[in-house]
Image (cartoon, rainbow, N blue to C red; front, side, top):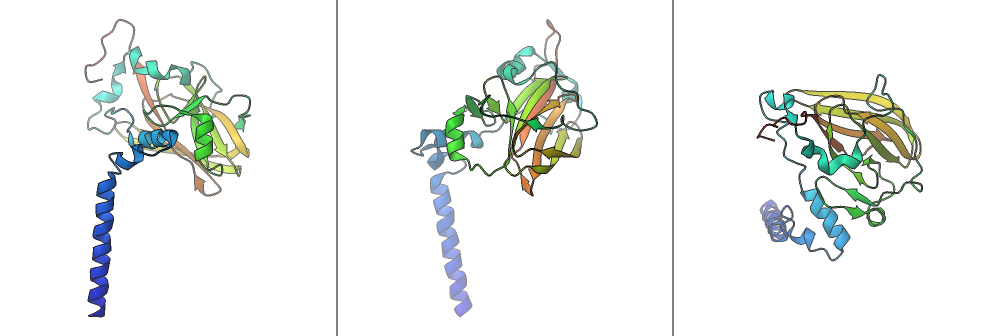
Length: 233
């Protein structure tokens, strides 16, 4: 009898919890978007938004061989260049110290969301976390679409510093992964990544047993001027 009462009490508590979740509409952004802090509300909305819906995980390999129009990259031009530090036998170039005070970003971007001022971001996110970003001319992002063969500059914040495991997962019609150990300086580090393979590249690192966030780099071949890109894109 005693155990039956305990079971009924637990069931009632679970029902109340589910009702609270439904009323808050967590996945739909109900209570998240109504947060009185406009900056925090905006950041939470970005976390709910997916990155562009390219069919990386569909069956068949035709998609991965398609070239796309230059307009596909237009929103991300500040985040890639045509040259960079060579990467020899690894995923990224060797990390070097980065002085954040000399090149502080104006805004940071999550996925396909709208920017949050960097000063507001640093007041919200704990300073002890490992962070990974893609550096642009004036802003940082955690998602980019870039042409095949281009270079992007990564910025990693490792408050503890030390040996870091760096991971890359590549999704095309098959999935492959890479791993390499690098020495990270304490604080901010910068390094190059070469987009030398078409596909979705997911990157992150681990220092002191603490994983960073992931950044996503979607790499496409660029169609020649005057050619007609596939309608599916």
